[in-house]
Length: 395
Image (tube, rainbow, N blue to C red; front, side):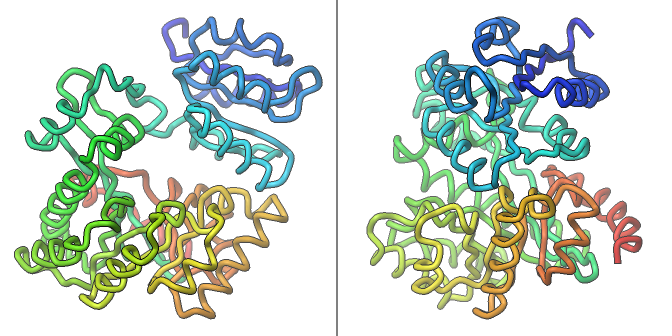
């Protein structure tokens, strides 16, 4: 396994490290382990693709390690594990991201083999690392948009009551001619600071419309197409008319388009956001509040903006069975959505046990690796056939 990608484990629980080592090696990785944060430099010398970090260690806690990772400009990805609450995990994740450390996910102790394996098998983990802006310029990105180098992957969304396929979320990637397939964290910030976020969004919208019309015709798909709406789209007063024209040109039903608004991305100017989002609803588009519960303005956004769907962030969903705080947040979000007349979608569904838990809790819809990973639209037919067989056993 000498040429296999390396995973570093930093946890003072020796038994847990042995367990994670078994899971990682079975998945084709080699591992390097330390039980002391003061040995971080030795771990980083091995150039690990992934660092699995425990927050609570005796000699140097995980927050200190995150600070050192940021200072060292760690190019890999971080998985944060802890026996503390989901809110503690979320705080650590946010802190790492604010310092420029790329977080692949969080895991609540006790760690399940299937949850760790899902992270290790994530396509994002083996994706090319993001390149600094001096390697990928705004001119490069503009050329990529113009030359049709963007590609879309789709993650299916299904109804928990019967497993019916109800929608797909379109996720953008960039097939860069030199750097290969790049994921959004490699170019979205560049798009935002260079004024290319809106052209990129419109390009993604046009591509998704065209491909989903093919999906509808070929697979008899009548579900929803979900597309992420960046903050800049909520400052452009012409955006609702532009997307309506695009939908009318291809003959798609307006009500089948769901714009996902991450609650933390609502712009500082709430008047413009309310203008644009309300006009999108008036024109028949649906709106989803994404990553619900991770921003400070969750309830305010629900009160003032015309959403159709509430999407519970995966940080809470993944640990809902094992963490009391996560369970209460998920259950209260489901209840709140129902009382407001919103569909509730849980993201981060990673195993069958969680499927049944969410279904019994009254959640409407779900997406996650247990159902399907994001895929090119050419692979959706094979997934649909396989899912129709699997869902019979689930319901």
